[in-house]
Image (cartoon, rainbow, N blue to C red; front, side, top):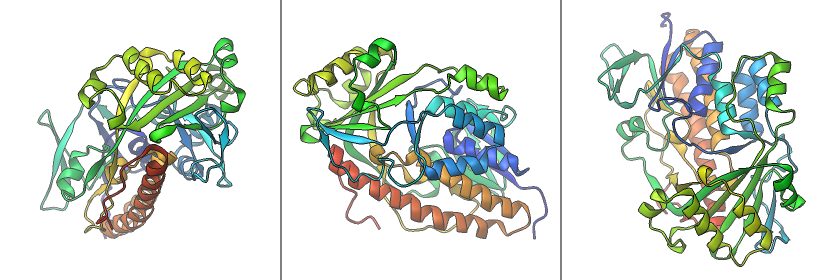
Length: 402
């Protein structure tokens, strides 16, 4: 039985990596997080997220009480999701992401949640540290290698570094990530008296999906703070500083790449105004309300994404290197469970590493985590791919995927 303190290295300060760090820190386990970005706001990573019961339960387990109170105080509560045709007439949906699963579903601003997850981790998170790989050592430890030539050694290395994870590429070179063939353009605009008045009331749901012809898909999702963020922070006495506190409407447009007038290179080099104009042209024959909404997009907030998905693989031999979130099971956003699944990973892995810190054998505890994570994680990938194919024309997962 190993009685020395457990040291955990986490690569990636996204939602999953930070949540894991919070849980480990809460359990008294030594943890350090290394993030390649120079700051939490150095690049756009998205806007609104739907939090389902899995994600909320994970946060309740991992975060101290005052931070969970901040999550509750800064979430946006809306009626259940709804779907419409291009004329904005309601259509039925059995989408598992609608918010009818019997549990609590809320919207959160991604940056707000990330700032909550960063609270109290100033001595734990190291920004501007890009991991390029790792090496295992004769004594059973593992060393992360960084682009600047530095190293960090611990007992466990957790890859929480996203869909392009260098750690996964080295550890599981046979794991594939596929281009789904879908391109998404994200944008947002402030919710003011004027803009709210211009939007049909029926679109103020948790998520409103507008299903157009040829798998074109427009999504609308409001983030409305109740109470305002500064009031919530003042009431709770928190020390978290939030930098994105206005109510807004997130908009996204997805379509098969071949339907767009821009190549991938052109799409990623286009200005926000050019991208907005593409979406306006793609939806010109839809409800006039859609054109009005798109004209309100703030060009400075508009950016494109290539939608990719992990291809499920068979379980691998467990070691002291493991994966979390998109590094293991990146998925289409079609049902909005990617972030929730990463948080579920973090809660389960924190529990298992807590057992190891208290004397259980390390590799078997990691194996138990991976057994469960591979099962529910790839099940979420398959569900997301199924609805992505129906809603957005996503390419199906390869027939040889287990």
